[in-house]
Each structure stands twice: as structure tokens, then as C-alpha cells.
Image 1 (cartoon, rainbow, N blue to C red):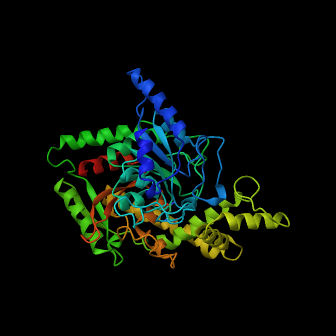
Image 2 (cartoon, helix red, strand yellow):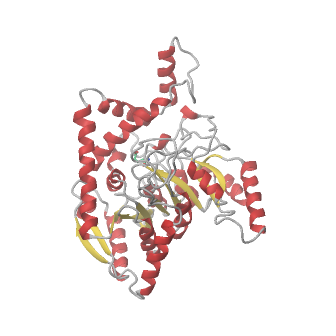
Image 3 (tube, protein in one colour):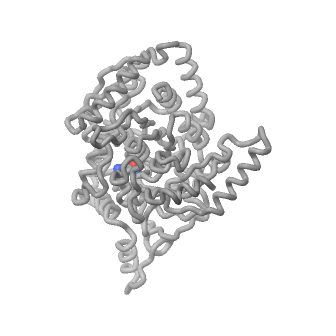
Amino acid sequence: DSALRAIDGLAGLNAFLHVDRDLTLAQADAADQLLAAGEAAPPLAGIPIAHKDVFVTTGWRTTAASKMLDGYVSPFNATVVEHLAAAGAVSLGKLNCDEFAMGSGNENSAFGPARNPWDPQAVPGGSSGGSAVAVAAGLAVAATGTDTGGSVRQPAALCGVSGIKPTYGTVSRYGIIAYGSSLDQAGPIARHARDLLEILDPISGFDPRDSTSLQFCDEQPNAPGRIRAAFDQAVRRQDALGSQPLKGLRIGVPAEFFNEGLSPEVASAVEAALRAFESLGAVRVGISLPRTELSIPTYYVIAPAEASSNLSRYDGVRYGHRAAQYRDLAEMTSRSRSEGFGPEVLRRIMVGTYVLSHGYYDAYYLQAQRVRRMIVNDFQQAFSSQCDVIMGPVTPNPAKRIGENRDDPTSDWLADIYTLGVSLAGLPAMSIPCGFGRPERPLPIGLQIIGNYFSEGLLLAVADRYQ
Ligand code: GLN
């Protein structure tokens, strides 16, 4: 009840799109009863969380922050939603985000921008902006997000909280409204690495309803409990090393992440964090990820291509918005789509359709797939011989002001430079707070920690030492 009142009190942040008091209170009562029963209570009993509005839910509406889905209620729950409910977590409702998760500032929501609790004139980041705001403002202990090209890491960084995007294929995409299916992964946002572990571990695992969910023969690299076991093992190893708990940890620092686009304030906060890791015993290794800049055009071909295909289901017939007036079927579809989708979504659909069309497919889409492979190889080379984790900035700058780049829609795309490569490679990565910007505008700055496939336990343990 107090959590719901806090959400009301901070409604100006526009973090929540849908709340349902009765539904939340019923879940809380059920959790109370389990807790009263004592030992048998599930691990997250009574913990208040909330879901980005791209996870479908039977109780709350699901809109993906789009007019296209206004009023839509799903007949089933996303697997992630089911897992967290089974663990006893109480959902406070659905969180604001960029429309269909396309954006970097939550400004593309059809329901207005969410606001950064550190400065309501600043963006909270995106696309999982509402998720980061809810945690930063203390409205929820943790929130789910999705990360296609940075949407968990970047809002966490800009709101001064922590977030992790797991290895592609380890968390089920079933019931998550699709954006770029070869990139989309769900991940939690919370204050600390240990809280992230509590959410990530139960939502991980093979799901037969997601065709890209990972399973190797009989082995599930992401079986529930596996991340926790890896975390515990890493922490024990650290504890045994005494005052130099990270001794032996090689931190790769990519030269390309410290390019001319990086602001001095972010550079110095990241540098201070690296020094703190060195004082814990880690060693810094200079590495190169030569395709870093190419990750932007590569991503902004592949993600819109997949989006244009995924969003073709919103045709005005099956669900969502339908135009009130039309002459024939074709006009019904085109009117419904142009009325229902916002400008950024339309832009991406057009880019995606163009790069997939006959005559351009080879030049753009296939070429992007080739570069994607090279990006994977660059990371693999670093992890195979040079380093155990990679660290660098999440964003070139702290949060911009709401509306700042309104006339220049692709300027936000360029600011995704440090997060996109990880997504294209399907690697796990997290963001943790590492400082604040200039004193005149002291907004949070995030440190990115990238690991090899299935190294979530190690990443969380490394972050936990620093935090
Ligand atoms: N900013 C990127 C985009 O707009 C990433 C979004 C995301 O990860 N969902 O596509």
C-alpha cells in the first residue's frame, strides 16, 4: 500500500503507465500469508517489483508505450513475469518506456517522457526509462527491462542505479513484445549487484516456448541456480585473497571506448573506477575493439530490419488500434498504422523495409551481418587471450535535457556507441554507478562491465566488490 501511495505521490516522474491497486494488494496479501507461514516462503516473497510495459501481463494492460496497443490486455503472461510471480515478488504495475523499446531517452513514449529523479528536466535514458526511474526514486526494489542495444545498461547509468543484460538466449523472450529478435534480452535494474542476482537467477533458464532459448544437448548453460552458484564461487575466491580480492583479474580497456566523443566528465569518472579496481588487485590491459564505430551502422541496419518484420503484425486487424474510417482493406491497414505508430517507430520501419528490399538487401543487410560477425570475433579475441572482463563507459555523456535533440533524431543513435557492440555479439554486460558529472550539473555516470558468454556470475561478483 505504501509503495502504491509513493507511486501516486511521484506521478510527475511518469514512471508508471498502468497500476491496478486491487491486483497489487491481492498479490501482497498472498505474499504476507506465505511469509506468515514461515520457512516455506518463496525467495522474493513480498518484494515490490515492476515490469517494463513490453512484458505481456494478464492483469495489467500492455501497450509497449504505443498508441497502437492502447487498451490491449494479453491473454497470457510473459515467462519472466511468471517466474517472478512464482518467486513471490509483488508487481506494482507496468513501466513507461520508449515506444516498442525504440529510443534512448524515453522521449518516444506515446504517454509522455519519464523524468530523471536526479533532475526532472533530464531524460532518464531509455528505452527502459521507467524501470530505471522506479528504482532510482525508490518506488520499486527492482524492475524488469529489455536491452536490444543498451536499453537496460544506459537508463541504469543515467539514473545512478545498476542493470545487467544477460547472455543472449539465457532469459526467455516469450511474452516480450519483439523489437529486434536476434538482439532482445530481458534483464533487471536494481540498486546493487546482489539485488540484480536475486532477480536474474530465477528468470534465467531454458524455455521451450522461445525458439532462441539456449540448451546444449542435455546441459542448460543458464539453468536456474547456475548464476548464483557462479557468483558464490567467485565471491569465495575473492574472499580467500584478503586485501587484494580481485588479484589476477585482467580488465581489458578498449582504446576505442575512449574516443573523441567521450566527455571529460565521463572519462574521469570511469578512470577513477578503474583505479579503484586496480587498488583491489585487478590489472588493466589495453585492448582494441576496432569495429566499435561500425557497430552503430551495423545495429541501425539489423535492428530496424528485424523491427520492420516484427511490427508487421500490427495491421489494424488482429489487435490494437484500428482507424475509424477507411475505404478498403489496404487503407484500413495503412491508416491504422500511420495513426497508431509514433514518428521514431515509423522511421525505423521505413529504414528496415528499405534495407531488406530487393536490390538493397545485399548492400545493407548482408553487409551488416558480415560486420556483425567481425564484431563477435573482436570480442572473442580479447576474451580468449587478453582479459577476463572489459570495462569502459556506458554513454559518452550524462543525461541530456528532455527535448534537447528533438530536431535531430539520429544524434541519439550515435550516443549508443559503447553499448551496441555487446548486443550484436550477444554478450552479457552490466552498468553500475561510478560517479557524477560536473558540479553545475551533477548527474549520475555509469561504468560498463562486459564479460564473455555465460559469465554473469563473475560480472556480478566483480561489481559487488566495487559497490
Ligand atoms: N537506443 C537503442 C535503440 O533505440 C537501443 C534500444 C534498446 O535497447 N531497446 O534502438
